[in-house]
Amino acid sequence: MAQSVDLLVLHAHLLTMQGNGVGYLRDGALAVRGDSLVDVGRSSELAQRYQATETLDATNCAVMPGLVDVHMHTVYAIVRGVAQDVSNWMQKGLAPFARHMDAEAARAGTRLNIVEAMQAGTTTMGDFVRPYPGWGECYAEAGVRACLTPTINALPPGGMAGLELGDLYPLDEKAGRESIAAALAICDRWQGAEDGRITTMLGPQGTDMIGLEQLLEVARIAEERGLMLHVHVAQGDREIDQMVKRYGQRTPAFLADNKLLNDRLLAVHLTEATDEETDLIAESGAPMALCSGSIGIIDGIVPPARRFREKGGIVGLGSDQASGNNCNNIFNEMKLTALFNKIKYRDPQVMPAWEVLRMGTIEGARAMGLGDRIGSLEVGKQADLIVVDVNTANILPIIDAPVRTLVPNLIYAGTGKEVQTMVVAGRIVMRDREILTLSESKVRAEAQHQAELIGERVSQDPLHRELALLSAMQAGQL
Figure 1 (cartoon, rainbow, N blue to C red):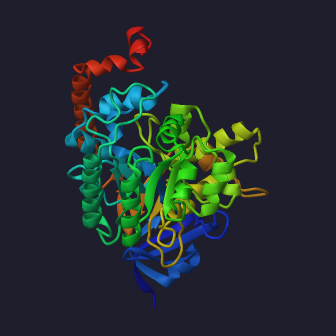
Figure 2 (spheres, rainbow, N blue to C red; figure 1 turned 90 degrees about the horizontal axis):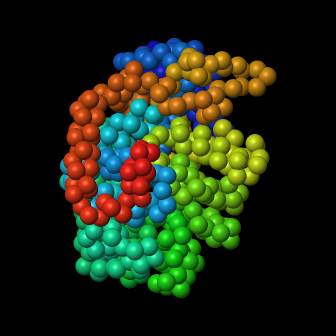
Figure 3 (cartoon, rainbow, N blue to C red; figure 1 turned 90 degrees about the vertical axis):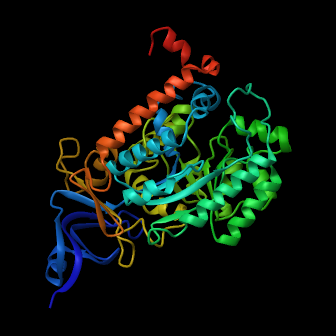
């Protein structure tokens, strides 16, 4: 007698990510009961074994784990494009806009980013923002998986806007205390919420943006609560300059000396890490968040992910912030990661397609401490998956012998627009590219409205005269 399940996915090019590769299964099938996978196998076997409330025919589609974006700043989608093609992107690009963002603008940015990421196949989003009212509710409503990292820093109101390049940041202990309290309130409310779909980390923005005493306090609280620390590490020459001036040490040595390098630290970027510093972090067990598109655009640098992996480190992919990276799309990050590293090392074998696909799925999940729950299609794991149409002009043809071209075609020719259906924790949240939990048209309209309001406020602020892109604007180049 057939067993009852809620969802049966049949006739897929199945990419399970089991084992050390992509775990390909021809004419593969999945059975879902509740929020979990109860069977993975051949369509001929599962079709006989189960009676489903709903069946998805995945003929001519790849079915794979939902993509994992380990590092995002979703609020900045509201000012997409203001910090590109410039030097000193934070001080002279983003900061003058960020100081004029209110809660409504932040919420509009987050919701826009969620829609964008969902339509490109991302089911798990590691969001790192300064808390604002309604932040967690955006993810609860959307039905996707989120790891909320409330930003913690001790910068005074206004942040870095108006500082001269090279100035030592003024750190405000009161601002730090308030930031820590706000972060803990988010963790209290959202850790394990929505049946475990929403989790949290603690996020000192950078070791240069909070005093040592408060940084160690945050680390102690994270350990007590069993939370990871999510920190920008060696993210640029700006940070290194601040650390040397304040402590006489570069960031990796500072972290090591203060016993903060371990597997509970998600180290973001490592843009300025030397080979020796990269080895130190990888060998500590700390995973790395690699944001190839963002760092390529705003710094012109390829972070040391290859060396990090060679030293045994786990690397997950992040899209960072759309004000600089321009998009939040893990298909984009997978392709850029492969291309940038091949170019950097002059080696076409570096970062092959199957490796970056694992970085966008199971390794990203492991980097966030969620590898036992998501990232691969295995019995007992949460049913987070995407259905990708591969019967498209840019993906076809797909051959299977003597070599299989499915994964290279997905990585080097896929755009994310091929994602048709998304399931998170067993629930279909997008079908035929229509998001079922949010009104895309309302999200887009509100984002445009809020962006225009921010533009008006920035235009009235004398600080806008320091914007790096202003000269290009005045010259008619934009």
